[in-house]
Length: 219
Image (cartoon, rainbow, N blue to C red; front, side):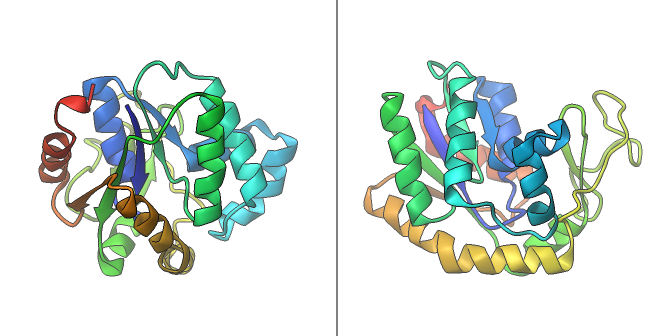
């Protein structure tokens, strides 16, 4: 099964991707992680996108498609996988469909997690991540907090905040979402592929709803 997560910033795409990965064996491809991997490696493309990411802006479509295709070719696509954070606009949809066509794949479902701007801001300002295993936590929402402040529960690595997790960067990303991503949602709704859930609820409730909506196709 091939799933796309589509939602405003900080809606929980990474959280629910992790839960599906742990429970059902999905491979998880985060567009943001794909970029950060290159930045961490100090590659040529990583140096190009470093400043862009810090400002909360997007890299160009051609570069993004190249990175996504390379990532897909590096995993076992015979197993179910999910894409988090891409495509974000209609021309990226076309790019992604071209990539999938090369790999003899199709988009099966688009999971749309709907949250309001205020909820997203609270989540993003409290978000911290383990740089080793990529597990995410939040210090402001009252859930998903680490057992020990500032330390990953699993690998005991100090947690870090993303450089683009600021109020200004979040508002910029949210405006981009409103201006561009709605057309992506509309596109997939017309194809009957969208599953929508209320992302303002607690993560356990949201995940249970996701499981019900995906049904017996989630493995």
